Amino acid sequence: PLPPKDALRLKGGADANTLVFSLFKAIVGSGVLCLSGGMAAFTNSRTMLIPSFALAFVSMVLSAYSYYSVGATCAATGATTYKEAWSATVGPSTAWIPSLAIVSQTAVATICYSIIIGDVLRDVAIAFGATGALANRDVLLPSVAALVILPLCMLRDFSLLAYTSMFGVAGVLYCTLFMLYRHFSGSYAKGSTLYKALSAAQKPSFGTSTTPLKALILVAMFNTAYMAHYDAPKFLAMVGNRLSEFSKLTKAGFFGAFAISALIMASGFLTFGGSSMGLILNNYASSDTLALLARCGMLASIVFGFPLVFSGFRTGALSLLSLDSPSQSTLDMIAVGTVSVAIGVALKMSDLGFAASFSGALLGSAIIYIFPAMMHIAHAKNAVAADQKLKPNKRKNVTLGNEVYMNYGIMILGVALAGIGASVSYLQSFTNILD
Image 1 (cartoon, rainbow, N blue to C red):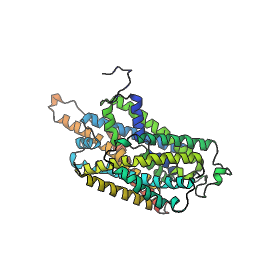
Image 2 (tube, one colour):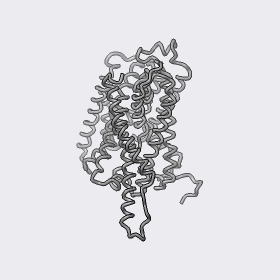
Image 3 (cartoon, helix red, strand yellow):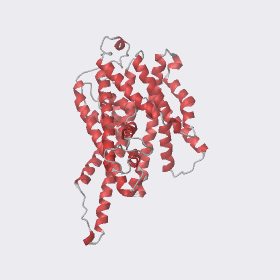
Image 4 (tube, rainbow, N blue to C red):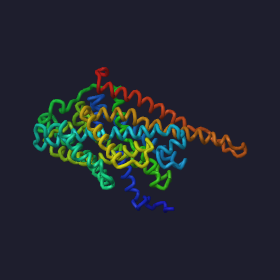
């Protein structure tokens, strides 16, 4: 065993700081760039920033708890994957349900990546002076997909792209600093050069309007921002199945994700208010040099990160379909089909905010709240049942503790968020009912 003060060691020798960063990297992604738009969906008032921080913090605490709960279930049952944890607790006959949800979430991620690539690529092209077809999103996105994204997705080995996730984190951190600087420097204040370069839709808009029900859109987006739960078994194994260390890792990783998410949400909203868009980078002027650097960084990280997301989708889909040894032609066909569908949807639906909030409400609530709670409850009931089967003199009088009832509450909350949150997201994006 390691001495108490020794650095925690990963397989391969990385220390605890590296492991915390790895979890932070797994949690934080491009989804944080839609949080300002999530605030704008329900308010244009600066006074709602504190309640939004509170929602961000509560969502983080619940997400961190359920992440830890998945790890605890794996430690108790010996499971090494999310699917195995479900099979060992709820039952193998329904293990396809969480698998389908996770595969669906990765499929949505390919669509979100495609939306971001299209928007950012257009803005970068315009910043470099492109006009006509060269600045047309509907031309640029399929062109880059055919020439860059698809060939990357058809690679035989994705290990060469593994380092690109580091660029993704670097891009998010740069965006955080750049957005904070632009806010505090007043670069987009009324009358400034950058303010004058904005279109009417981009210009800051503040007032006193608030629609509380629409705050569920922001809550759903937090589900996307804090989602990494299918990786919990992997990180548990990295800490040698020690729940005390896994708990420390979970707290550090999720608090770091909360800090970055809150800063990006606040800086974007305080700069643009009710005009904050689904992808906050779309609000910044094409002539903004710092914004151009942010766009270029995010574009590179997402283009090269797309194949990694696709790989996760393909692996999950093949497992779900019980295809253990597919031919290379089958793999290539999946790549062509997945990229084509993702790009096609992104061409028709360019609202990243809707994609993030709808999937966050429907799939995120299931993966983060409902499934972990169901596994915890089932494992507790199995323990009680196993204890009751023992002879009276050997029983340990195992009972359902308060944590089980808390998980019932989390499960009910997840169901409510899934149903109401998804409905609100849809009504906000495609109807005028909530206006």
